[in-house]
Length: 300
Image (cartoon, rainbow, N blue to C red; front, side, top):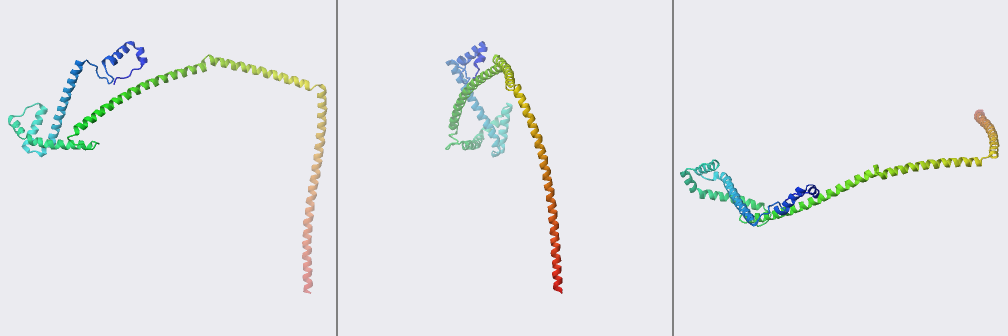
């Protein structure tokens, strides 16, 4: 997939823009594959086909060599020795002796039978691992081919989605950057710009106007006081104040007199209470004496 380059970057780098547009339009496809001529495409296809064949042969050889190690215990001892020699010769590049090679070829049917059994078991395990029903070791290659084609189509769709997502992300980033720039400009204009200074000056002017109005109101208040309280009114109020002071003094005297009388009444009440208590005691003693007299009369 060809990476996306923002338009602003291309505009700031015109030479790179020319190269990038030439690559995306003339040289490369959307999946980053090369746009070749028909002859070049044919040669590339043949090379890819040959490379695929070589890879398949290499994988087969690797699988056979790995499985030969696993089936050694199922083969005769002399054949195992020849197989070990064969594997060593493959690793080191040496050649087998003719008699060993002839013995290896004679035991090849037995080796193929054991290999076929192990590889068939592996294929059966792979078929069982597939989620689809009815997959057998013989239909496994076709099933895997369909799976690979489906995977490739999904990858292509995923590349398309990624490209669309990247474009939207770049667009969103551009919008966010524009929003941040606008916000910074508004903040600067609000705090340090002409509008901010004008508002501060207007606020100072209004404060001075309010102070002057407050002074005028105080002057008007004192003028009204002078008009309301002339000399006659002031004298009458002073005389009335003296009258109120006299009334206050008389009321205080009456209050003290009433408090004294109340205290006397309270003292008299305490004396009456004491007399009542003594009278009750006398009555009790009188009753006790009468009881003694009655008792004495009864005894006689």
